[in-house]
Image (cartoon, rainbow, N blue to C red; front, side, top):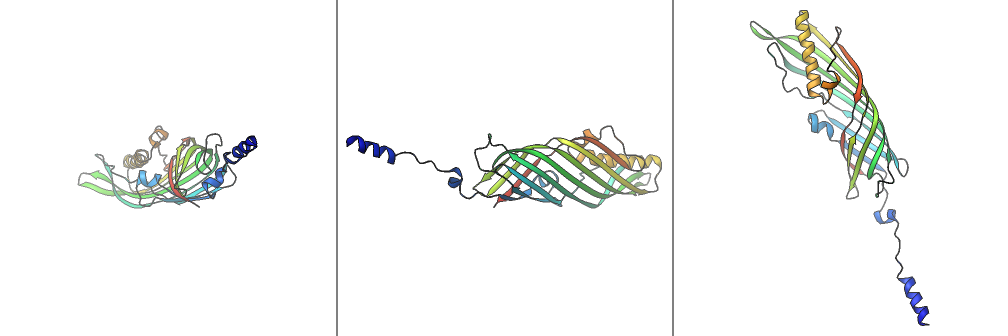
Amino acid sequence: MPSMLQSQDTVTTKPVVVDTAIKQGKHYKNVIRYNLSGPILFGFTNNVVVGYERLIGKRQSISVNFGKVSFPKIIEINTDSISVSKDIKNTGVNFSIDWRFYLMKENKYQTPHGVYIGPYYSYNDYERTNDFSLKRPSGMIDVAHTESDFDIHTFGLELGYQFVLWRRLTLDLLMIGPGISSYKLISRISDNLSSEDNEKVREALKQVLTQRFPGMNFVFEDKQLSADGILSKWDIGFRYLIHIGFLF
């Protein structure tokens, strides 16, 4: 009898294994998010990109982002002979989609919390209209009206980590996103300029592009706007994102 009572005690004190999903509560499969990257780099004006992520399995998701963006603000383009005198129009659109695989061996949390990898595609289109002034003996005068359209298509692979804080708040950090990109700038100049002054305006447009977009000084280092105002190139691309979102 004493041995039987001891056996019963052993059974009643055996640890109970709690399922992780039950312990963590309901498994939410949707995330709506706001892209902080554009506002941080280029300002909050005209940089509003939102996104949606949907889990399509235990370890996979599809993520879509879209919104409006703007060309980086021109701080100052002013040399001895030319300067930007007026910003007239500054608009743009952004669209991207990625397919995420959350790494099971690296993650101890329920998705979408954890490390992920996957392919992505992104598209950005920027439109900008400016007036330029050239130096004359009488002073600086407005002589050139420019309309620019800058397109970027990027295909690549990404590595990131998404935190889930307080069960609902998400912080998504896309840390590495190398890819291949198509860059195309079309600039139209309305003027009555000499060929020398026309070249100065084209060089100023390139300066605006390469100085205000991260990495563009390397992409277009050896490229010049053609006579018809086109500059295009395939080159290395990259993607970096910071999202804040809500899990539901």
